[in-house]
Structures are given as structure tokens and as C-alpha cells.
Image (cartoon, one colour):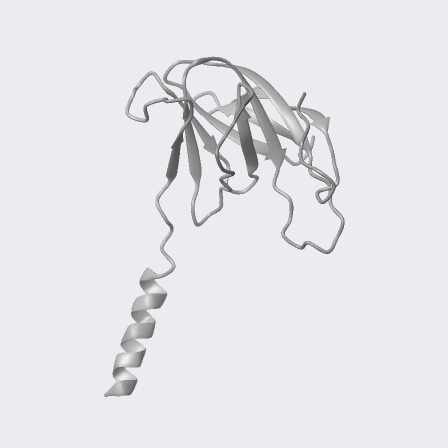
Length: 154
């Protein structure tokens, strides 16, 4: 009897414990996620980029998109300056550099964009999801050692 309960519990956890979490929606500067005129900025889960600040205002936390939980940001439309960085790998004993980027884009009202790291150019791309082509590319502005300091975008 105990063995059956153990097997049933294990199967339940295996089937339901691996379900992906919901998409995390992060409003920026008071943008309303329910507003149809707001801009939706999705972070690619295969080639993630970390959004650090919008318009010079640092975000309260760093959200890392993955297959388990993807993040989207809701912004006001208009000309925006995004401060971005790449996602460093998790092994702390190898020296690594943090790449810091600035991306300037004019975000259309009600549009949806995808932010991803382009492997070929090693630069972040902002892609319009309706037309499937890049509308802006990030520029590398700093590359400090990860233990030395953080990004200097200015």
C-alpha cells in the first residue's frame, strides 16, 4: 500500500511539477498591461538579454527569461533608450566579462516586440513581431570584468 502511494505521488509530481510557469509581465514607469496602446516587449528565452533600465531609470530587479518562465515588459510608446546587458554564465570561477549595451528605438503604440541577443553579431536586436524584422540594434558601450564592477552606460 505504501509503495502504491509513493508511485502515485511520484507520478503526480513528475507530471505537474515540470509545468512551465506563467509569463511574468513587468510594467515599466506605470504602464498599464491592460492598455491596448501600451507596448509589449518580450524577451527571447533561447537568446536572452537582460533589460536593466529604460530611459535612464534602473529597473528594481533583473528578470532572467528562460523556458521555465518568460518575461514581458509593458512600456509607454515613443522614443525609448534601453540599457541592456548579456546574461553571464553561471560558473563563477572562470573569468568573464559583462557586455553592456544601449539600444535606442521608437516604439509604436500597441506594437509587440521581441528582444534577443543575435549570435552572429553579438549585439541585442529589437524585432517587430508583426513584420519579423529588426527595428533597432544595440551598441556596445562597456565590457567590465564581472567581479570588477557593473555596467557604465554613460
